[in-house]
Image 1 (cartoon, rainbow, N blue to C red):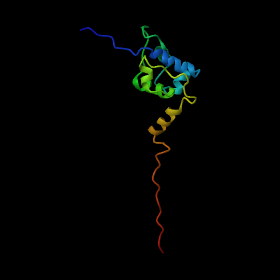
Image 2 (cartoon, one colour; image 1 turned 45 degrees about the vertical axis):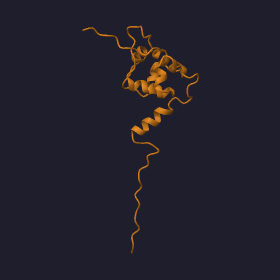
Image 3 (cartoon, rainbow, N blue to C red; image 1 turned 90 degrees about the horizontal axis):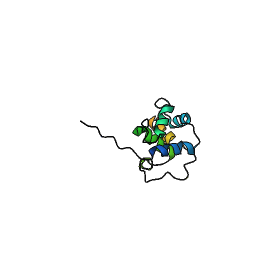
Image 4 (cartoon, rainbow, N blue to C red; image 1 turned 135 degrees about the vertical axis):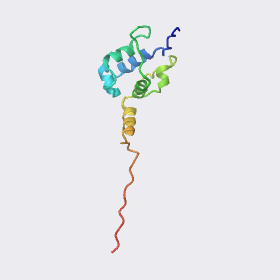
Length: 124
């Protein structure tokens, strides 16, 4: 039985590189900003940024792609759709979405206040 090649997102590699270079980050710095030091290596980023025709090219896993999109302040469609362009100017604070999401996942959200216990006054 033959195996068909999996369709690849055109231009994803150049958009990932464009995001990293727009902020002036090295590949290891990019990994750190994504918060994926335990999951990705510099060679992974190199593979993500390679031309899709290169046999060593790879695409990020969906959760990693989502982190990249959030870091850049764009929806994931912008990264995957070859007809959509990244904005000319990316947000000045690239960690704006990642920090909020991470805090919610850890249960430290500022908006989620725990109920206060009210002491009843004792009557004498």
